[in-house]
Image (tube, rainbow, N blue to C red):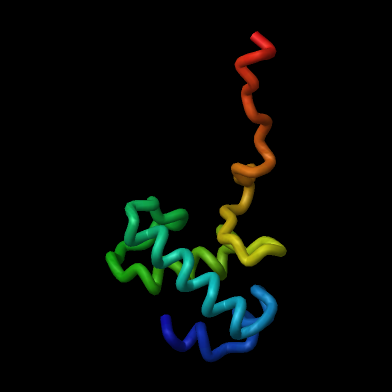
Length: 86
């Protein structure tokens, strides 16, 4: 698991060591808050889960350094319901 962090491939995948550490930290916070893992691993090691999610392109940082899940629409982009229109 930690060996994957030493390889340049994962660093380059996310755009640098700072972005990698930010992505890991934000995803660990989400997992600790009750988010479900996006990969099917036989472990409770959250760090290993996060590394595998990155390697499988399941999570990424957007341009504002917000954690995003691949395929999900960001909350800010969803249309708001205006009750006055009803």
